[in-house]
Amino acid sequence: MLMLFLQCVKNCDNFSVNLNEMVANELKTEKLDKDSKMFLNWLVGLTGKGIQNVLRSDEGSFKKYLSNLNESVAKSALESDSLFGALQTVFTDKNNQVYRLNWREALQIFCAVGAQTLTIRGSEKSMYGKFFEKAGSRFVAYTSRFYFEKRKH
Image 1 (cartoon, one colour):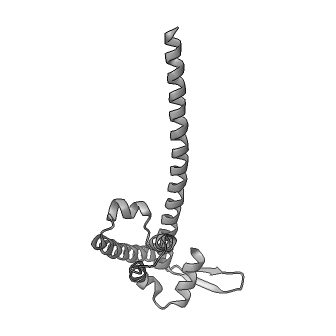
Image 2 (cartoon, helix red, strand yellow; image 1 turned 90 degrees about the vertical axis):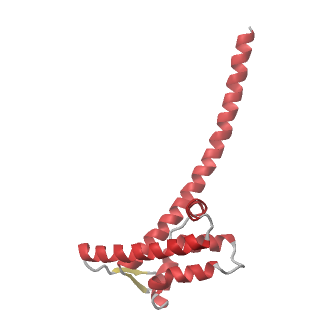
Image 3 (cartoon, helix red, strand yellow; image 1 turned 60 degrees about the vertical axis):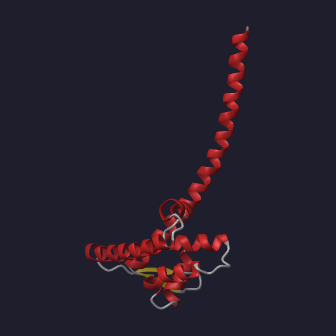
């Protein structure tokens, strides 16, 4: 995620300013696979649950979300710049390629990584929840049977 973002910032003019519009246009592509859609949604801070529960798959809500996100990131970047000064984060890869992020770009990657993390943690919680749900129902069935057998005697 990080390397893709860094490469896009470096190689695409105004990437951070145009990110939301580019994602919206890509998501309109009908032949996108599930993983590509998920990745694009992460880039704008969305998880599958966020789309289901907040946006309810409504295109108008999605556009409004992107507009609000753009305003929030821009405002947060200005406030951060005012409070902490200009940010120039420098990353260097193994080929000595240098990538730089300003406040806006750093905030955008934080949103993307946060959405990715929530998706992964949500999947883990779901997996463990299903395991314990099955284990719990077996435990209840076993203890119930034991309880009723004891009452018969």
